[in-house]
Structures are given as C-alpha cells and as structure tokens.
Image 1 (tube, one colour):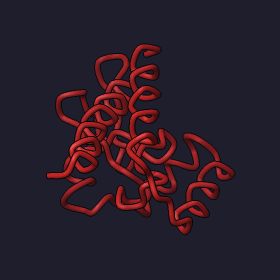
Image 2: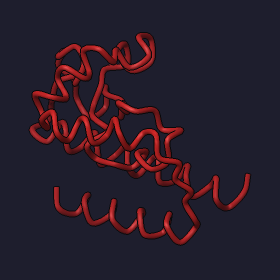
Image 3: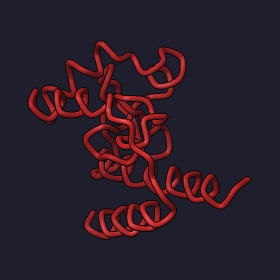
Length: 126
C-alpha cells in the first residue's frame, strides 16, 4: 500500500470517529436515512455522495451516522438520506454538495495532512 493510500485509510477511520461521535453526542442518535435509534458502536459513517469523490470524502456536511442496514444493505438509502439531510442542514448546503460532486479534485499528501489536522481539531471541539 502506498503512503497516500495509507493516509486515506487513516483519515477514513479518524473521520468516521468524528461523524459517529458528533451524531451520537448524547450516547445515542438516529440514522440519517431511516431514523432508527443508533449508538456510537452500532452506527456507520455514511456518505451522501460516495467517498470516491475525494473533494467530499471528508466534508462533514456529506457524512452522517447511519445504521448498517441503510448504509450497507440499502447502499445508503439515498432517497431518505436526502430528505432528512435537507431537514438537517438545509437545501442550499445539500445542493452545494450535489454540485461539488462533479468537480474533479486531486489531493496531495500535504492536503491529506491538512485534512487530518482539521479532523483532529473538530474531534477536540466535540
């Protein structure tokens, strides 16, 4: 595995920790798609726009806690995800995410280091 891929893998774990902690701050939360009750240990970090879009992979507006059924079995349950995402962050931010999915973003190792520092700060602020 290349150093770049190793950094991505590390950041995926760190970002997942952030999203799951953020969305279960009171010990539990609700799946962004179906609304079922989840805990930090039982939820996934589910992306609205898939993680292969590097420009959105570590964007807090694009990732929310999901139950395993919606994230994995139902491939994100995106119709419900979008409806509830609009309720959570508003249509303007959702449309911004949707527009940015079409931008081809290339990240450098320096970019990944900066992203890692940003995620660490966000975790500290929780």
